[in-house]
Amino acid sequence: MRGRKPYAVVKDKNGKVVDNEFVVKIIEQLFQHPFVDYGYYKTYIYLRKKQHLQISKHLVYRLMKKHQLLRNQYCTSSKKMKRNWVKDLLPQVEVPFTYLEFDIKFVWVAGMNRSLQVLTILDVFSRWNVSHLIAYSIKYQDVIKLFERAFEHITIPEKFYVRCDNGSQFIADMVQKYFKDKKVIQEFTKPATPQQNSHIDRVAGAIVSFHHGKCCLSKVSV
Image (cartoon, rainbow, N blue to C red; front, side, top):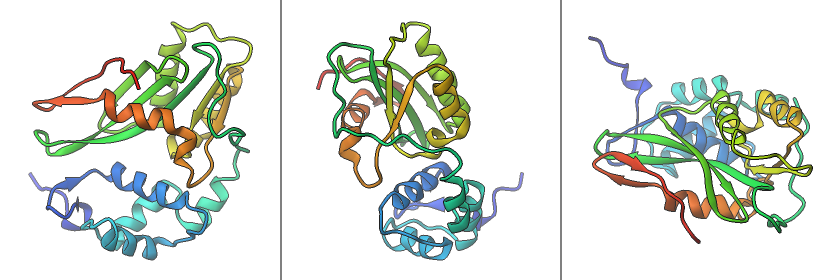
């Protein structure tokens, strides 16, 4: 069986293979900085020198084109649907299950020699892990399916908020339309302000523990 061509494989500084989705997440986070306006070549240099990834410029271009991260594509796609930016640094919550935060984290599994993605939905008031998904790749369709599963156990009040960053899965028109149809207010954190999504950032790292390459998630207190 023929393997992937060398230029199609990404490795970290230790020579371990890195998933393409992980690279895309790094690029998306880079582009959230207000003074970054990189084309594919400057992004390639950033990945090589700052992130210490062994990656070809051809693959960087292909990934950025596929995920609409090339300069012209990014400007166009970001204007498809107007985003509702957060107004408060931290959510103002007085009762449980009225304000959720959600995010995707990457976790390296040594036994599998690759990374997994963990999508977590957190209730801000109680810090309860409402639902989660672990997969090699998470698409916007998976975000919708996970919330559908979560909403089976939650009564949506008159004012219901969800907060997230600007990941490609979250800004997708279908995801925004899904929340709008559910009469759920989706808020996006502003670029380069991770503190606006601090609850999920703190909890996501704590709820995932690994033992022989297996993932276990549970409720945590912070």
